[in-house]
Structure formats: structure tokens, C-alpha cells
Length: 307
Ligand code: ADP
Image 1 (tube, rainbow, N blue to C red):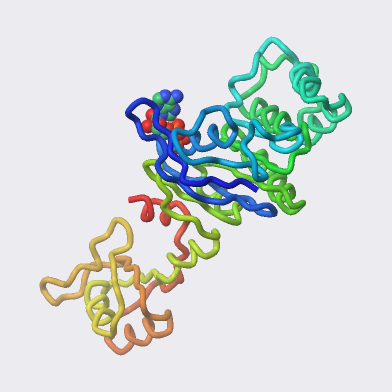
Image 2 (cartoon, rainbow, N blue to C red):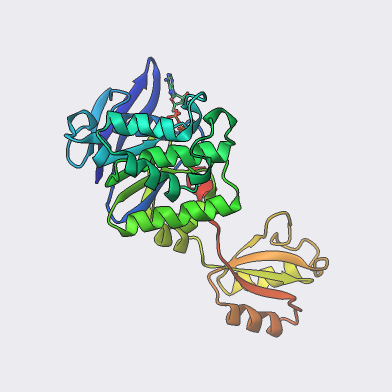
């Protein structure tokens, strides 16, 4: 469990985090989203005791990171996979970390296998790809078999197979009852991986909701393509619908001449079912070439929320 309470972090006169409060619960993957500079890394660094808060606090399992009795077995983190010393082998790097944390060599072998680096264990990290460094960073985070995991952009540099592997790994770690907090700018991936989303902007909390609830709020649209889009949109509005041009068209605007609009323009309609839209189109003599429920992507929801 991670608890962030009224957290504020100033860097000189820069307010990186401002009065932030949220919980990250066990048994779930929690996604941490925000534009660049929103304060995600700062928050993670404060949780991990790497930066001191200006005010407020961040607790792991009820205490500050520095007060954890066995930190490596309680929390594992990856903040910047590029920070690793390149001259060592993956095995030597993890072995040194394990030694410092009182963890046996057998666990090093286990985590290297878990992240798919067993075959490269004796190779120098300097020759590793970005994706391999990410895997190594995740291995280091897992060394102590911790109940809390904090990962900053863990999917960076992974190929599609690697991203799928990471999703499965994080979901299974959460299913075991662990607390998993991760940031990512890969929205589709986040919507597939995270049960819960915390969205911040300019250091402040914007959203703290389950992924399903958040997406459900943006899912009521029906996409309609019609060669009579402007005319149809007027009829739909008269029936109480909200009609917008789908991205990149101007079809939802009021017809200026009363004549039907050009071929195949798209509308995004909310407030009416697909059946009702079809009936209204028929009653008004409008051809419809497409009539589909439209699921808003997390990326679209995120852009709207953070605007
Ligand atoms: P994010 O991880 O969401 O991209 P950061 O936490 O890195 O955001 O940054 C939040 C704000 O704090 C930004 O304005 C950034 O420039 C500033 N900042 C981050 N780290 C430092 C630092 N060590 N010194 C000064 N300013 C910083």
C-alpha cells in the first residue's frame, strides 16, 4: 500500500507537486498518468525517499521509505534504466544489489529468468539494447520479491512482444496481492494493464478512478457516416442528440444552404441509441453508410481530461 498525503514538492521556485493525495492499493495495477513535467517522477522519487517532500508525506506500508525495516523486500523500484553501470555483466550487477540487500544468488538466477535475460546474464550491460536495460531494471526491482513495485516508464524501449510480456508480468504480480504503481505514456498499453488510473497535471490530482469507470464516461458516442450528414445532424439535434463532426470533418455544423452535405461525412452522436439514429435517418430520407458505437480510447479521454 502506498499513501500520498497532501504532498507538495518545490524545486526552488518550481512547484513540481502540489497538495497531492492518493492511495495505491494492493492487488491492482495502478497507472500514473500525466503530461511531461506533470510531476510523476518527482512523486515517485518522494515515495522512494530519494527526494524530501516540501510538505505532506508519502508512506509505503504505513511508514516512510527510510523507516522500512527491510526495504528491498518491501519495495522494488525502477526509475531510470539507463543509470546502470555498463562495465559489469547483468549477473554481476544484480549480484551486487542482492548482496547489499542480504539476498541470495539463487534469487538473481530466478529474476534473470523471469525477465527473459538468462541467456544474456554474463554479457556486459554496455552492449545491452534499451529494452534489455529495461528488463534488467525490472529484474533489479523484483530482486527482493517485494510487495510494492514502483516503475517509471517500464515499457520504454520494449518491442511489442516485450510489452505484452510486461503486461502479463505486472498483472500477475498484482493478482498475487502486490501493490503495483507504474507510469507510462503508452496509453493503449496503460488501458490494457492498469485497473486504476491516477492522472495528474501541473503537480495536482485530476483523476483517481478505475480504468473501466473512466473510459465508461467517454463511451456513449455513435459514429455515423452519411452523404447527408449536415441534414441528418439537424434532424438528430431536433430529437435531442448532441452532434459533433467526427475528427477532421465539418459535417456536424448546421447546413447553411439546406442542401445535403457531400458524400460520406462523419458525425459523432451522443444521447441517442444506434437504433434511434437509424430510424431518424430513415424518416428523413438520409442514407447511412456507417453506424457504429464508438469507444473512446484512453488517449482521447486523457487529452480531454488534462486539457
Ligand atoms: P514528469 O515525471 O511528470 O515528467 P517531473 O516530476 O519530472 O514530471 O517534473 C515536474 C516538474 O519539476 C517539472 O517542471 C520539472 O522541470 C521540475 N523538476 C523535476 N526534477 C527537478 C529537479 N531535480 N530540479 C529542478 N526542477 C525539477
